[in-house]
View 1 (cartoon, rainbow, N blue to C red):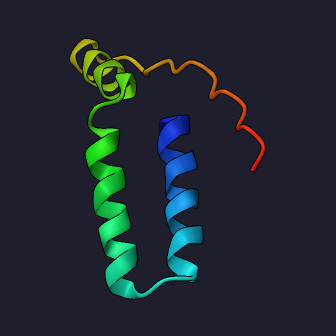
View 2 (view 1 turned 180 degrees about the vertical axis):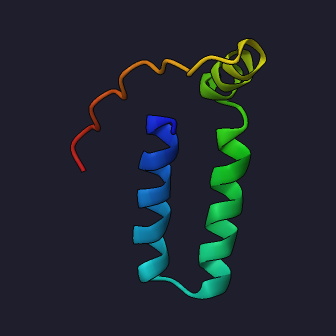
Length: 65
């Protein structure tokens, strides 16, 4: 699984704890649209075509929160 996907899943879960179901679903929808534009999706598709395991670059450290 893509490290970015894991990080975004955690972000969505944390967001949804403090918001309504409707807001949480909207947030997840926005995250999903964003995820389709990352280079990870290209890596996953290439690996699937070649029947290999995808290699992902490390996730950059987060800025101060």
